[in-house]
Length: 370
Image (cartoon, rainbow, N blue to C red; front, side, top):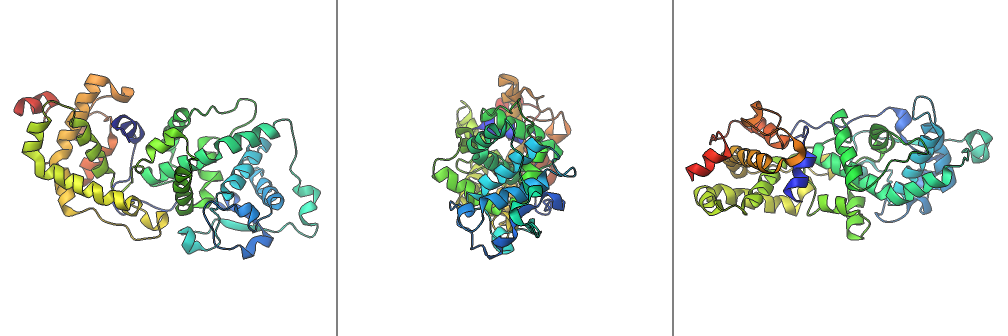
């Protein structure tokens, strides 16, 4: 990922250290509805259509539409139809599994829907058809994969499916992917889409599906950019962001002097990033719900190197901000105590990992010192 994209996506809070991620719970009206007949579903296979592998499409749609259309849920026929179709689309990627351990979830957000004595042909369970039904279905078919990739990206890089401060990030992803929200039918809000409709799938299986989509060329280029080689990981963000900044410094005329002075620290960061790249998602603050495995810790050497280099990197980002007006954000003045930074990931990292060993008033002072 290039520095510009990384900084754009990191404006806002980010979870950086162990113990700060929690599993977000949703109310039962947002649970995934499975037809009662689905209790014998086999183990999921990513890329294998669960709808044709044990779940009947009609009953699945009726159950999810019924729940999502209620006043305490989406309460809108357009949104409910979109939500049910999107859930069905995601199911075709093979992300449904009845085993909590394989889903790596803390709370089961699946519910088995019983149609009652009249069965699935009950008039009460029918889905109303209106003149936008085909447009809604076409929209889901075109962008369903991308919506899943967006949710995975935000969870992995921020630590949750949704917080109110993520709204603008999701909107930027819409813009980056060229997705225009429809004007002729009621489209869900970002919170309704990424938390209430999609939270029920957890994150471990959607991450598997996202990686499968990337391999099988089912990923929009702006999302592929963000998953190359992997998206920023909440839990290792301070190291990978620092490394991205160091790579940007390589283009500066003073790089050789900088490298001579801080070579050992630069090497420590490089070595740590190489380790992170082997199994990046195991460094996530909530690794158990992302990968099902315990979180891997960053090495002491990399944290010491971060403390040495982070303020210099903040100064460099400040310098870039003055030179290029990155993201139209206010530039950094002094560590995290100054104005809101271009890359708030760094300011929070400074807060969490202590004061840096090297102080620098500005990039010009730093360059002059070399």
